[in-house]
Amino acid sequence: MDIAIERVPLPNAEAHDLLGELDRELARFYAADQRHGLSIEHLFRTGNRFFIARIDAVAVGCGAVSLLGDHAEVRRMYVRPEARRQGVAQALLARIEREARGAGLALLRLETGLHQAPAIGLYERAGFARCPPFGAYAELAPHAIETSLFFEKRL
Image (tube, rainbow, N blue to C red; front, side, top):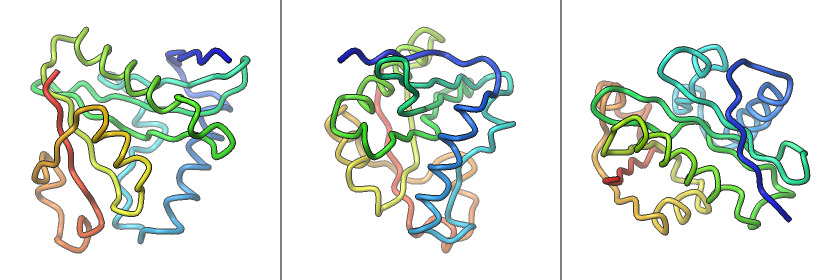
């Protein structure tokens, strides 16, 4: 089984499908104001790079990185349930880290939800450490981030 990670420069049906699945999954656990994912339109703007993971040419996951000047931020990581525990998320995260390094950034940050135990484990195994809310998250009302965890990693 080969996992291929493809940079997708423009929104396509697979991106819409994967992000829709992610949004539905997150809506089961978090109120609307506690979900901080970028819209598909925003993900394809300058400064963001979006990736689709494939197994045998089938789209099974996605992730993105925002290149923000002083740091990069992991965005919209998702792997379809049937493809989990096969290394897809690790491959996506490794590609995101390479993109951030390639852009000359030395710090990678992220926000995830406290109910996303597999994602939290992934980030901790990859060397991320918890940190305080950063950037725009630090300006949000306490209720909006009470279900959020924040991580960062020096690259």
